[in-house]
Image (cartoon, rainbow, N blue to C red; front, side):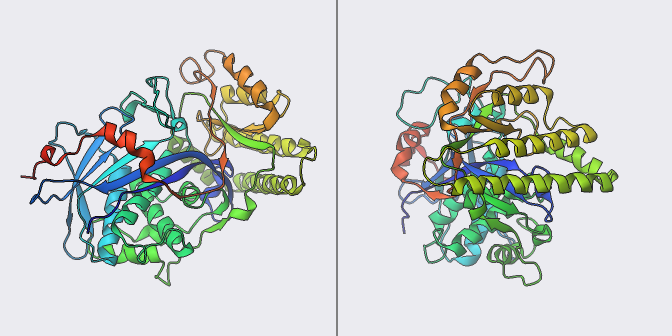
Length: 472
C-alpha cells in the first residue's frame, strides 16, 4: 500500500531559567518553545517497475553536500533495524549525521516490533527555519517561503543555540513513525501518542548524544512551553543499542512505559509556563555559538568538589527560578490592556543573573561571559526591555530578552549599530549582533501540510524512476 506524504514540525527551545539545575530531579527548568521549527517531510521513494530497494534517502537541501543514504536490515535475535550509511553515491556526503542515523534506527526498530508493515524505501527532507543558524553566508532567496539557502556545508554552519538537534530528532522520529504506522497504531494527537513519541525521541536523542541528558529540549519539542522536571536516568540505562540481543523488546517497553520497575517520572506542567499579553520573549544572536557540553562538565565537577557551597547556590537559584515563573503567571492574570508594572519581574531576573555569575566565577567557566554581560546590560537600558539572560548552559549562544511590544523598534535600532570591544570574547569579539525573528511558542509538535514544502523538495532532488538503480 502506497502511503501518502507526511510532514511534521517541532519547535526550538530556550531554557529561560534552570540552567544546570534542570539536570537534577530535585529542581526544575522554565523552558519556552520557540516558533523557529525543524520540519521533516517523508514520502515514498519512487523506483522503476520491478525494482525493490531497501534504501532511505535523507536530504537537507538548505546546506551544501547534505545528503545521506541508508540501507537497512532486520538484525537477528530481535535486535532491531540496523541502518548503514551508503557512501558510494556521487551526491551523498561521506560524513555521518549521528542524530538522523540514530533517530532513523530507533523509529524503524519500533515500527518493526509493533506492526507487520513492510518497511519500504522512503525519501526524507529536512528543513530548518531561518533562525536556527547564523546565516551570513546565505544566498538571496526570493522564493515566498520561510526557508533560506544557507549556502554552506552543515559542518560549517553556526548554530544560534535554539535546540536544533532535539527539534530535529523529535520531528524526524514523528514523521518516520507517522509514515510507516497506521493511525490506530500511533495517534500523535492523543495524549498516549504524544507520550510514546516523547519517550522514543528522548531515547534516540540520548543515544545520539552518547549520554542521558535532562531531556528538557525534547520535552519542549514535543509539548511546547512548560515547567519541566527531568526523568530518572535509570529509565534508559539498560536499553542498550540497536543490534544488541532483545533491543526491540526493551525499546518497546521504554516507549510504552510498560516496565513497572523503571517508569518514566518526568513532570511537564504546561500551565506554569505563560507569557503576559504585550510581552515577548526574543532572542539576540551573537554569531558565535558555543558547545555547552564543555561548560557543563566543569560546572558539575566544581559542584562535586564543593557540595555544601553548591547546594546553597542551587537552592537560591531554584527559588529565583520559581519566583520568575510565578511573576510571569501573576502578570498574565492581569486583564485587558492594563498598564503592567514589570519592575518586580526585572528585579527577579537581575537576581538570577547575579547568582549565575557567581556560579560562573566559582566554576571558572564563562556561563555569562563579559561580552554577554555588556550586551545584556546595554539592552536592558532601553525603555521597555524588562530583562534578559544567557539561557540554558550559557556561553556565547543567543541571549534571551523579555521585551514589551512597543520597545521592539528601539531595540532593533540599537542593535544595528551595537559593537563589542575587541579582546573580550572569543577571538576578537562575539561577532555581528542581530535580533532573531523568533518569539515564544506555546505549541509543541505539529502536523504540517505536505504541499508547503513542494518547492524545496523539487529543488533538492529529481527522483524519477530512471534515475534510481537497484543496489548491487
